[in-house]
Length: 136
Image 1: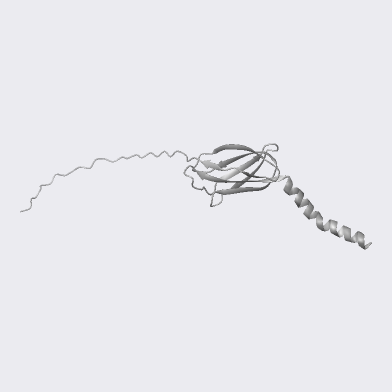
Image 2 (image 1 turned 90 degrees about the horizontal axis):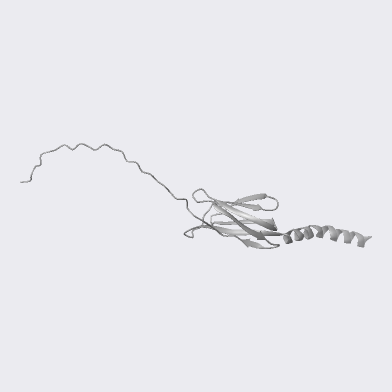
């Protein structure tokens, strides 16, 4: 009887470990960085990860260093897209996330063209002729 209790205790004690170990083997991680065309990191960029088979979307934002991570994602085919206000939207990038992998997807953002128009309207000022005085 004591042996049966001990066996049950060991099985129940190890059950969470076995379940979490299983979860690690059918998932992966997506990591990357976002830079502008000069190579500078871009913080606060919204990234959207789309799992193609289920159309499930998850989003995150880049940190101060321009890095991002999507932890614990199911394996499969994905697209990732980036959006930042002063940059052009990045077309979705397709990739496959394999079992236990760390898939790196680095993105480069192109600045939006800045168009600035300056309108100047002023009336010409009237010059008043003055007599020149010479120094003696």
